[in-house]
Length: 395
Image (cartoon, rainbow, N blue to C red; front, side, top):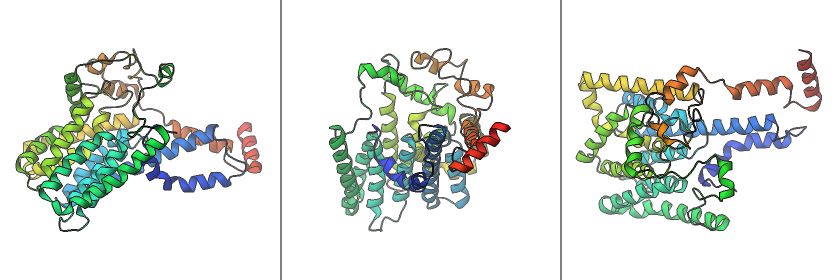
């Protein structure tokens, strides 16, 4: 049984119906322990992750469209898609971040719907229930918005709580049945004999404030370093908290802040082997939304607008490095793995961005392996496959 939460695997199961059906009918059977099986698994994971990330972009655009113009919505959705770790992290593999972003974008979509709608609370509750089921950290935003509905939208309180209760009980029932833990096995301590298999280093005890500062400003994991347009999001969050013109936007501020503070207290706040601020990727839909309260002011002030455009352009450039260059340069492992020497996270002389860029583009191994499989005929039927293998050998 996978120790990862069950919600994401269930949601992407329909994507696997066609390839699994094809594999079941393929003659001769494709050995899943071979190169072809390995590539099918990796390709499906990458396609699924990309689709989840792309869906979060579309849903966020739908939410933004209710608040700003089409052009502004496209710009902000584009910044979210290509100028953040949504591209370099969420769309590359099936981590939990993609679904968390999708759920939080869904919460914004639900909150921007007409409050007169009978299903207003249901969609917000369902989105936050998905987020909490995927990562228990998001039970905190769910509780914060419970306060909002109890205070400001009491008529929608029951419909907000319904999906939270149903999905929460279902997930906890699953966890208890299979793992005898209501909150599931992830994350959980591994037996000492198994630790080395997962590449974990010695136990690291760091001050809480180190994670709080590092998640924002460290040269190799800082949000403001890898995604500099978030400077403006912080300004927008302050504006949202002060004005609260939509009545619910002020509740987004403590929701995002709580997620940030929880991750700052993690022993490995830098997120292990990854590119950029992995743990803060989840709240990017909220950070993009925080640009809305200051958008008109940004357009009026040319200097501020120029600064935002420059920050967005730098963010896109950094993500290009993360998508097409990383992990070339082996920054996470050389000269010492970060799991053994976390001080490298603060090394300004040897940054993850610069070393990956200088090492050059990373080869598209997935594509190369597929070309090898096609040329060898490994996925063809027995007769066709044999002839292609013979041709490949002659060449």
